[in-house]
Image 1 (cartoon, rainbow, N blue to C red):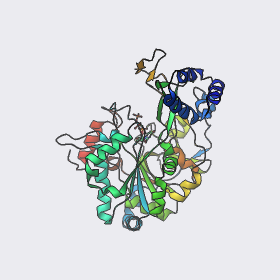
Image 2 (cartoon, protein in one colour; image 1 turned 45 degrees about the vertical axis):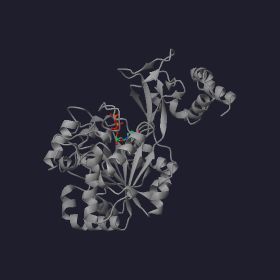
Image 3 (cartoon, rainbow, N blue to C red; image 1 turned 90 degrees about the vertical axis):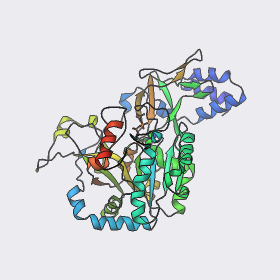
Image 4 (cartoon, rainbow, N blue to C red; image 1 turned 120 degrees about the vertical axis):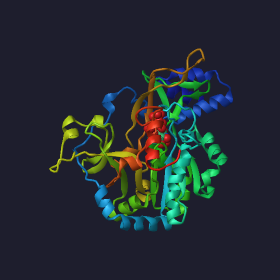
Amino acid sequence: MGENELLEVLREQGQEHIFEAYSKLDEAGKEKLAAQVEKIDWSIVAMAGHEELKQERGKLEPLSALEVTEIEENKEKYEQIGLDAIKKGKIGAVLLAGGQGTRLGSDGPKGKYNIGITKDVYIFERLIRNLTDVTDKAGCFVPLYIMTSDKNHDETTAFFEEKNYFGYPKDFVKFFKQEMAPSVDFNGKLYMESADSLSLSPNGNGGWFYSMAVSGVLQDVKARGIEWLNIFAVDNVLQRIADPVFVGATLDSGCVSGAKVVRKADPNEKVGVLCLEDGKPSIVEYYEMTEEIINSREENGELSYNFGVILNYLFRVDKLESIMNEKMPVHVVEKKIPYINEKGEYIKPETPNGYKFELLVLDMIHLLDDCLSFEVVRDYEFAPIKNKTGVDSVESAQALLKKNGVEL
Ligand code: UTP
């Protein structure tokens, strides 16, 4: 983008302060900043502070789940189908590790966090162990794709190298970086994080497939003949990865996607619930539901909207390709955004000072025709680490790991 064009765009968008910063830079700095501005999707930035631009929800209806009792009855059958698909190389796994883990308050990649008590146990290590439980059974390896971001890529890859991939074969692990998005103050003005850079942060976990495509790792997926991708979060240390029973049940169902869900602890639990919206699968957050919907019950007394997602999904690759360029809703989130002020001082705010823009993987489900809702037992499969202490913390995850016989 030429200088005049840059000025024009920034003026049009009410972001002249960025041009002022640009004017003070040397050629290399100018090129860097202009390239960042060029990548901005202004329609997203325009959403800052505009609640009215949020999409209205459609008509919600319950979606029944394949429940634990039924899964148990057919476990052998599902497991066989799943293991067969794994052995044929049809299943790949995608670890979403591009987040910044701000609530945990550790600056590095969350997966580097040591949750051991008497010995070192890193989150990444725990996840690899969970995966090898399956690959040992299948007698072959599952390709693992790890999404990082500009903020943690080098540290993540160096850590895997240092730890020799925790014994997993390096040929089966590929890293790719997600896209970055700008941050703005409460008036929609772009923040800068250094003299020659906008404040950029990972654009949420919803752009993972697009990033696989633009980074080139999708070619590896295709070359290997992978037909399904199991995506999962870095922070659930009880995560079952490429779980043959889940894979088998989803394949057997004929659905193009599957989601692991847990029974809600109580009607008001703050989880995204898998249901139908205008006849298509959808994940609706607790704050988007009316009291009536939250408390609605089926004839058997069970909650109608009873199953929360745990960020473990299975997607058919050809379907992901067909929806890749569809617009996904952008979530505008208030965050603490470090920035440089007019004096060039670096400020790390104590309270939220602006908005970040995020795409969320849960919104992908609604772009698909169907999704198998697959119930798992919370205490065996869900130990998320979001906070240092209290709910969903290192402590609660340690307790659950111990309950599942994991030595820490
Ligand atoms: P969270 O929504 O818990 O976000 O991510 P986070 O960044 O890890 O933590 P906080 O909110 O800052 O405390 C759920 C999963 O999505 C991944 C995370 O790494 C985690 O596995 N994620 C999140 C990404 O891969 N990229 C993102 O931009 C955001």
